Amino acid sequence: MYVRGAADGDLRAIAEIALANDDGDGADPRYVAHLRAHGRFLVAATDETVGGYCAVRHLGGLTLLCDLFVDPARHGGGTGRRLLDAAFDADGERSTFASRDPRAMSLYVRYGMVPRWPLLYLEGTTSFDGPAGGGVRAEAVSVAVAAAAERELNGRDRSADYAFWAATPGSTGLLVRDGDAVAAAGIAGPDRLFHLVTADGADPVATLRAALATFTAARVRLCLPGPHPALPLLLDARWRIEDADQHMSSRPDLLRSADVLSSSLA
Image (cartoon, rainbow, N blue to C red; front, side):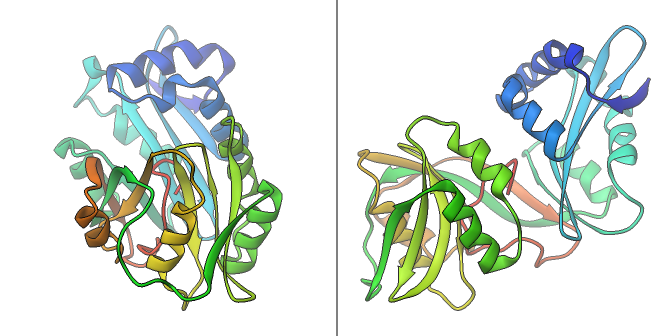
């Protein structure tokens, strides 16, 4: 078995492995195409079959492992190690969101990533109790404007990711302002807050409340880090934790726990 870049002819095998591991992303050709275009998408294969795949992206000095899935018939046979050996540079910081499968977590620890906090998949109403936030308010903007605002906040150009999220019908960019200052930027679908980055020094509870106030759907989904200060307020408002991943990284401060994150694209 050898590791190579994914090709168009691998899409069916990738989807089959994804579904066998209860992962929907890898079964979406648009998602695979996004990572092939804006990261590295690798497969472990013989001459006749694909046995596993992984995808990574480089965000500044950070390598984010977006996916790693192996054909269940090959679990424990070293396919995951072959993929990670090819995917990771010798140096540099690393991060991923692991499933709760202890085998996956053990593998990631061997590659220098240790558990930091859970990423919680939440669903609930569009409001929750908490400080009013003064003049903090959110507005719908174009996706390009929201991506440019995030670049101003943290120096990262996520325009390709914003375009990927925006392909969901009814999506819009979001800006949260505190007075005249931009306090947060992100993107929302009709019933999902995909991504929200809060400025340093801004109140992440207030920015989240403002973003949720823009939704017309009765219930909304989002992924929130366990340490996010809004979590107790959301649970008090009867939001439900529906699933969880585990953030693992080579350094504790690589991802901010005050942001709303997308598990595969962070």
